Image 1 (cartoon, rainbow, N blue to C red):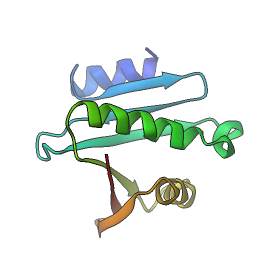
Image 2 (cartoon, rainbow, N blue to C red):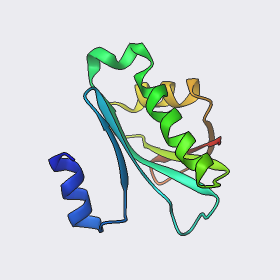
Image 3 (tube, one colour):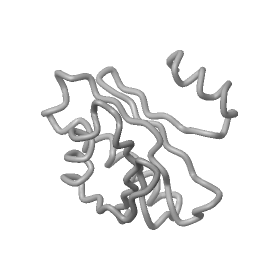
Length: 114
């Protein structure tokens, strides 16, 4: 585990987020109590030199596979409009088959079937 994942576990609890960490990126996800049919992507990062190689889609696919194995119907994500990476993140999510389902409080919420 990285210091980032150690920090989040200390901050939010041992079971708050699960992680997939690879040399070129990571994704954290959770199984939210408020949405028993979903697996929620919390954070995702791919190093810039790997972004055009499909690495984001690879991470999303790993989370989707985990969701399917856990009997989840949907993968959900949210994007904050005021971040420097919003446009790129939105392109990646749309290309990966996510659809926007709501927008409020400076965030866009997306969903994809497992």
